[in-house]
Amino acid sequence: MNTVIYGIPNCDSVKKARSWFESQDLSYTFIDFRKTAPSPLQVGNWIAAVGEKVLLNKRSTTWKNLSDDDRLKAEKGNALALLVAHPTLIKRPVLEHEGATTVGFNATDYATKFGR
Image 1 (tube, rainbow, N blue to C red):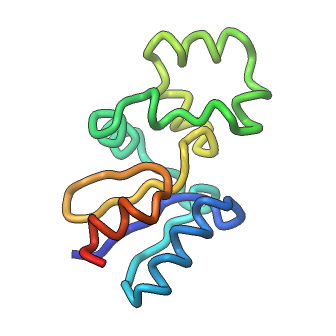
Image 2 (cartoon, rainbow, N blue to C red; image 1 turned 180 degrees about the vertical axis):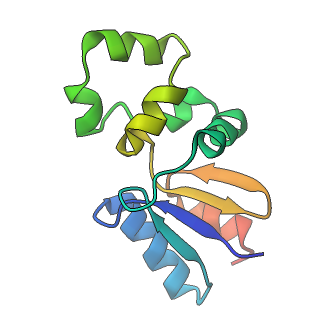
């Protein structure tokens, strides 16, 4: 099964993940959030897999530019619509492999997951 990495190309964590895959000679497909936004169903599946707190990137510039009302809604468990409307709020990279979802880059976790 093909691995899919979602994110934005200039994100340092996404760069590290892609570099790790290339250094391990592992194939993957990269989906740029800015060119192909994830669907509400897809974001909902990610939330179900890892939780809103993991998926919502409160360190992003987009988060800092949101209204207090939008931030409050997201913090009260209503992040789905916000994440769909603003994909750069999604913590990156999102990795899908063999039906599992992983968020963020950790070389040790990737090595374990891919038997390296």
